[in-house]
Image (tube, rainbow over all chains, first blue to last red; front, side, top):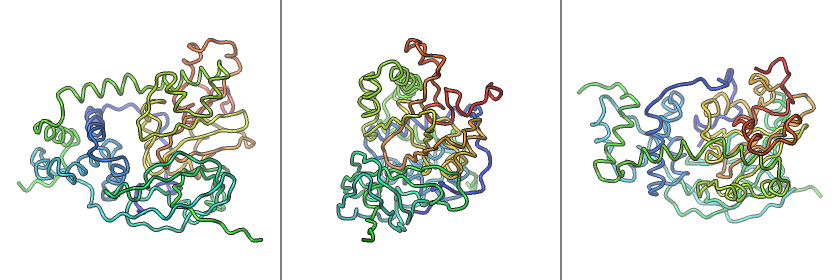
Length: 205
Length: 204
């Protein structure tokens, strides 16, 4: 989905707070541990977790510190899986306990295809309502396959309680100046692109 | 109750904890044990030791560049099962690698330690794919125009770390001494250890 989380290349941001400012948030280790407990006990997978964060209302996402997103995803998924209820969470706090918006349908992978190292490929012009692990900035762009990673479950299905076939991810190298002509610093940008997001580039004979 | 303010994060976190504990799902001591494990085992020193060994042991360097996950395992460092691959990116005097996750904040946290706040902030995630040189300069790393920048966006569950260039002045040092100079930022790519892009006057 084209959510608030998809930040690569978005403009208007100012200086990075670097190095980090010290802060003391005592609830953060607890939020991290509860999330780890849920993953360890296989209540949800990492694609469901990431999508639960993406499903936070945009204004909630953008105003939430990192570990609030972790907590919100864990609570949302544990409610959706029937482990706890939203009502009891709300009853245990003074005020509201915001959760993520409901899960929509996912989608299957495309039939297997293959790409070779050195091949120029194009990222499909995809607009997906559910989870997608393709940053918007590479949509429709061409790059070169420079490496192939071990297969992973197709995230667009895996985040939606669907059987997810495993497929390779291709390390595709893009030129920043082709991603953002006239307004990027010169660099190569490497993205791990799932096979289903790619299509062949027809070479002119 | 007509109170509609959002509960504090402390309260919300404890609400989830108590809901799980009251059902007998969350074992007593889990939170303390997990937190201690994370803080003691998943530390920057792991990656630093891998880097130092790669600087002093050519065979290990080759193995690490070919298969980072098994090189980490060789040194006793585990990775979660969904991190199926660790790609080690080699900096050179003329090539500079930089890691980001634009969609969330993924890192090889068991190897380089938990990501710092700036890595998870929107500014870093939005800017470094598009304005890498400018953003790095603002962070104190002013790379020469001739340096090729390679930005790696962690969109799948493959994880990355950078093998920095060894500072020339440290040639001949033993690995344990070298490990002490390797920083988390140098393994993410917002810092170099060999002085490239870091004028002496700017060093603090």
